[in-house]
Length: 433
Image 1: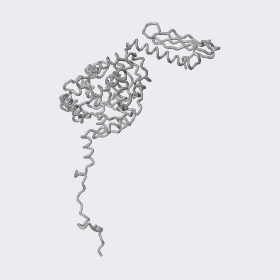
Image 2 (image 1 turned 30 degrees about the vertical axis):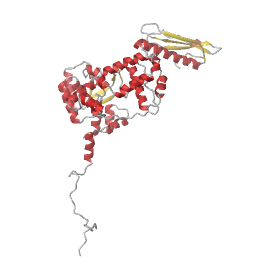
Image 3 (image 1 turned 180 degrees about the horizontal axis):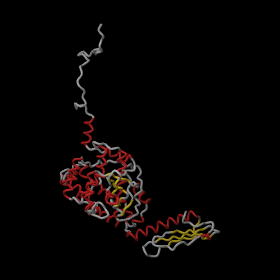
Image 4 (image 1 turned 90 degrees about the vertical axis):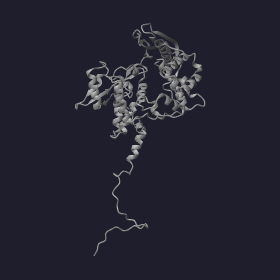
């Protein structure tokens, strides 16, 4: 361990630098050399500008036990730091705050029934946590709770785990003990059918958005569909990311993305920098933007609805006005009748999926590896999922391609070589003498 002192020669131990606001250094000393006992001293800055908090313990038997104490002290002080910076809450209060925030995000009349049931189930099973602070709940506690729920499907357990994780995110905690929990018997399956739009519907949407909000969502929807970038990657696009090659072709260099929960910029999802080629139409749009930059640093305007997660609402609103998807009243009635139409729940992120599907299943089919590189998928298997997400019109088009009813595929009629009785006549020419 790099932060331990030389146990063979305690005279070489150093006090090190004086602890500062971000300085953390554990010390392991000899306590009694004859008895082979150790002393642990641990410093950590809990509040910015204040004196660091100190924890120490003496008469520890064995170096392994001393290391365990260091780990224990580190976790203890990290939790105290989290409470000081974020403002720790008891689990009950954290849940109430998160539930109010979720209710504010959606219209209470159209709340998802599964989400409501998950919330009720979570309140029931986390009753013992009500008086615990959120930072006191450990990963092991979450694992025992979720995997220990009797007579419950693995998918339902996973929903409860996701809800616990969401409560930590909505309360602004950096820690999330539910994030890496594995649910026994749960296998992730992609059952949500892509809320697809045809190329005609996409063109109709983009033209309408440019007419309604040319300097806002008109730009955003066009960029999202043509580039296939994620929402956070579009938010992080800067003018410096626009590059040109020797042939005069334009590209976006995707170097970072914006994390909406943590409110900070970070590396893209797959951790790699990639290039996204731009169409001629999008290059024309960008050149117009360059003449009158909405922002000196960022390419796309800082739209308030987009920043507050309302882009999907605006997208559905435009599609309803174009009568591509049903109105709220019809959607509500369809839900009551048990009808599930994927278009009614279309999200802003689906424009990226539609872009990928159109690239793979369009008239001019593009190589799978090219699309994978372009959209920033880590593996080809992820990109290949979009091959399965074809819509009805694409399904029929594929069937028509295999049909032999078209005259183009039918060869000219040949003389029958079979008699009515079914005897085959030998049509080989015989030489006449």
